[in-house]
Image (cartoon, rainbow, N blue to C red; front, side, top):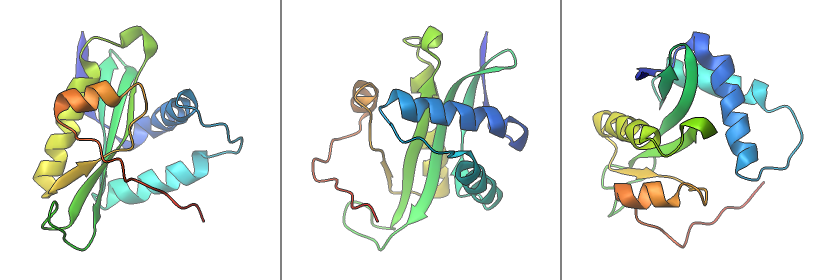
Length: 149
């Protein structure tokens, strides 16, 4: 039976391993140790309430993850209070895919964003995730760009 719970500090090592697995599955080819930076980020932002994650569990095993970071920008018309939820860490173990787990996790973190007061939730979707997000109601923004420093 699959259950859902919020990420706790004791599950952080496994969560980080799954995050790295997700990034590599999505095509990341960099080869350096991202674990310290991820641990620092999650520790700081879980503590101040600007990151939350829901997990799907099969017994004691984490089989699905989600994450929502809360940021604030100057208000704009499609986000009048400037509070944005940045969706990340959406991952379901291969043996558990196509069972509605990702949709349930997405619903839970979107509700967290709503409770936080966000006007908008954003994601850079993987090819695999596009259908999930569009079915949920996300709209593509073809103008997203990034400049690496």
